[in-house]
Image (cartoon, rainbow, N blue to C red; front, top):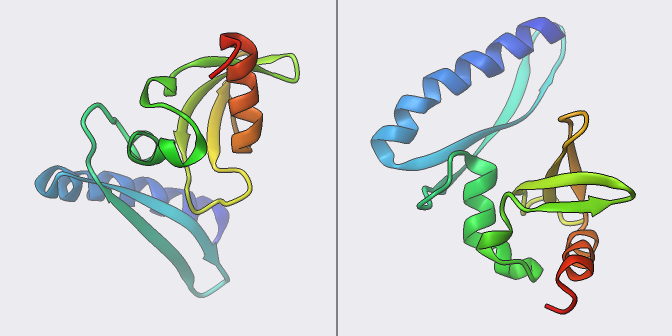
Length: 129
């Protein structure tokens, strides 16, 4: 196995899993793929579909945002972190330290943030929460 083959594997799995997601009304995420020269290992994670969610990160956010002092309407919200504007795009509950996933608006890269960073950024905008 090599990196290119693993990327192709991830892409093909995502395409194949779409029909399973649609037929069972669930969201499935292909996790980290570890590999060596001769084998690979991956983890699939799934959640029940949530109304209004387009992908796994959004579904996780909409169903579990209350755990992090966030609201459903915070999904898609723009916040300022260290001088950069970020858009809240989802949640990864399994990442205990950095569960909130954002997309920085100037470079379109995804960032993992702590719940405290995000709630404080929202408090600076809203005043009190």
